[in-house]
Image 1 (tube, one colour):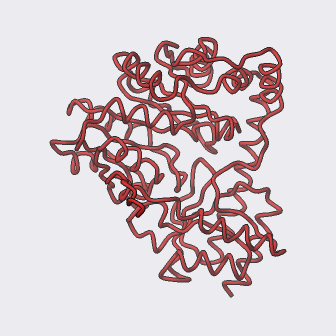
Image 2 (cartoon, one colour; image 1 turned 30 degrees about the vertical axis):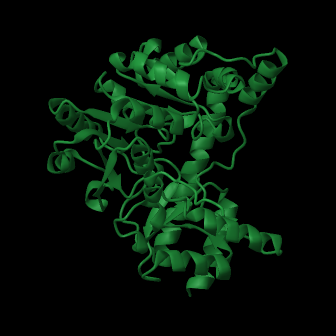
Amino acid sequence: MKRPAHIARRMADIEPFHVMDLLARARRLEAAGRSIVHLEIGEPDFATPEPIMEAGRRALADGHTHYTPAVGLPALREAIARFYQDRNGVEVSPERIIITPGASGALLLVMAVLLDPGDQVLMADPGYPCNRHFVRTFEGEPVSVPVGPETAYQLNAGHLEAHWGERTVAALVASPANPTGTLVPRAELERMADLVARRDGRLIVDEIYHGLVYGEPAATALSISDDVFVINSFSKYFGMTGWRLGWIVAPEDYVRPIDKLAQNLFLAAPTPAQHAALAAFRPETLEILEARREAFRERRDFLLPALRALGFGIPLTPEGAFYIYADSSAFDTDSQRLAERLLDQAGVAITPGLDFGHHRPEAHVRFAYTREVAVLEEAVARLRRALG
């Protein structure tokens, strides 16, 4: 008789991406001949810029396929430090920069170095779903704090004051955020960093969408304190999703512990990707990336008023990333059911709120404006017909 599989208890708390079921359904419809507009997946439609591609090809041709140090190529760490100086006017030692296998690898390392079993991490709900799972993986307890438009769907110092407990060791914020595209103002970041420091905790700031901000440039948390953890990535602004490359800027005392963890968990981030990323900061690459940022802004500026005109409730203008988080309760009390109906009837795939937490998920959906304006126009026309 086959023995039942032993599965760790933590797995009961780790949920799948619910949108992947919707994506699979969309792929089946496409295989049957249906035209589907994909606004559900948070991946830019642009290919990796050619200067980065060429640097990757050259790295392979030159035999750069062996391990790097666990903390990353020294040249890439130095290039990131120069980028902070040039873009943000912030001096960061390359020694504090750790290259990781994507921002997910960065968050795993930070949680592993901070958490003992039962330790709590505060985070916003709605928010990126993997964050709470990263905490649970290391036997910590994610504390999801309900947030709404009154605080731009972001944690603030008042939330931290109210929810910080004896077992709390850290707070995690994202600016710009997924799924809302909102920012944490600099003054609020300062208040949170001060409050967390007074409680001997750590503030973790996810800045992976930092390059994709459409108004005044966002302030990096590194301009506020050397004691915060900053997470960033080559995936979104730099267009390198499949290359799996990110980084941490860590407080100095945490660099060696994270180095040890990286050696054991990952050995190192992908070597060809690291060599390719050296080209990400060239002037010709940045020119391409800034043109793409402007294209995303144009997409937002089309889709936002169009969705409002259809009847979706969008109280705030998203300032960054490429998402619109919309109240869909005017159309259905169940956003999962609405998303399935719009896929079947309109051929438009969107993400229901269930993936982003437990605070009113049934009343919200997320649109990713990762398609060109002409495709967004088609999506809006289809939605208009389906919604009457």
